[in-house]
Each structure stands twice: as structure tokens, then as C-alpha cells.
View 1: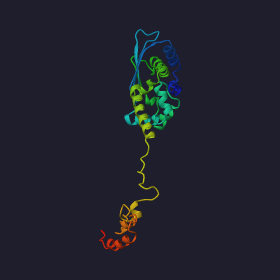
View 2: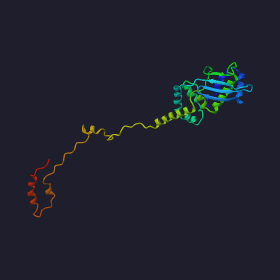
View 3: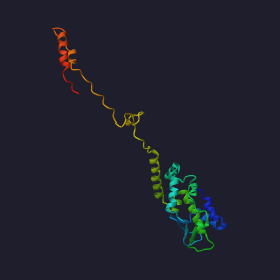
View 4: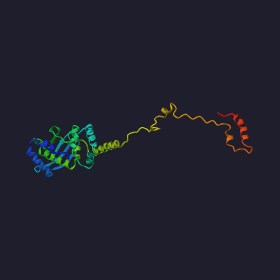
Length: 243
């Protein structure tokens, strides 16, 4: 959980000791009857032991803009442990650093960052009802850490949906294999045209020429002897040969 003491210390530094002591006690005793957190605004109804009616106390901060939230969400999605903790409903340890690096603070740490009023109109401000609201608000952040995000402009559903989509994009990029060049047709030999010249295929070998009288050499010796074959050979050799 983010450290709440600097947040509470901002108001306790006003030196309204008795007011904040009573406000802490009233919050502990359940005098904050309702507490609603929305974008930039906390509204509580508080009725102390001496009050005849409940008063409305309001505490406002600036909600972060879309570009500011985009920086925070990108940084959160880049670290799996932050996403895992938030999906499990826990405030990640060290989350304040993410907001600091984005130039923001998750909780207001200056009185200039807060606006307050109460229908009791008692002075000085903050009154005891606002003090009780501050302590009850801090307690609610311990119970439901998404309340502080809602106060800054991101509901639980919006934040988790955005982180799921960003984390999915990170996973796809991590497992997308790089495009490889197509394998060479002849590994180690390079382009066939470089080997054979301008032609992509080797030149065909010239057809073998066959002697016309080769058939005579394949015949069995005739009954009349080899003289007949030799007498026929000049006639076979005189036959035309197809080119």
C-alpha cells in the first residue's frame, strides 16, 4: 500500500491538534456515516456526538488527464508484478515511484492541491467533520486501494481493462518472431546466374552422334561368317545421319 502518513501529515501540520485528535476519534467511532469517492471529489456525511444533524464534508483534488494516465499505465504495464498485484486487488509496493517518474503524486502532498468545505461552516478549516473524513478516507484506501485511483480519475474497471490490453500488447511483441529472409535456392553456391552466366540453368549437353554401322556390331555372327558383315559395313556407313 502507498504510504498514507505523508498525506495525513499534510493536514496534521496545520497544528490544529485538538481538531484532528477529535476527528481521528470520531472516525474510529463510526461517526462518518457515508463516504463516496468519485473523480476528483470525496463526499462524506459526518455526525459527531454533539451534532444534531449530519454535515456534508467535501474534499476535492485534481483528477489526472488522459495523457498523464497514459504515462502511468504504460509504466505499470511494463512491469508484470505491478499488474499482477493490481489484478489481485492489492496496491503494489513502490507504486509511488511510478507516479513520481511521471511527474505526479498519487496522493496530494500539499494543501495547495486540495480544496475542502463543510456545511457546518465552522472556522477555522478544516473543521472536525473534515478531519474525521480525512481519517476515514485514509482507512478506506487501506481497505480498497482502487479508491485512490478513482479519486484521481480512474475507476477500477477502467484501470484494469487498460492494463490488460497494454500487457497483452507487450506479450504479443515479445513472442512475435522476427521475419527471416527466404532460404537461398543453392546454399553456399549463391545465385545460379552468377555461376552459369546470364542463363539460370546450365547449357544442355550436345546429343551423342550414333554411327550407322553400330547395328552390325550388335548382330550375332551370321552362318556364312564375318565376311558378310564386313561387306555390308560400307553400305551402312554411307547412310545419312540425322543431326
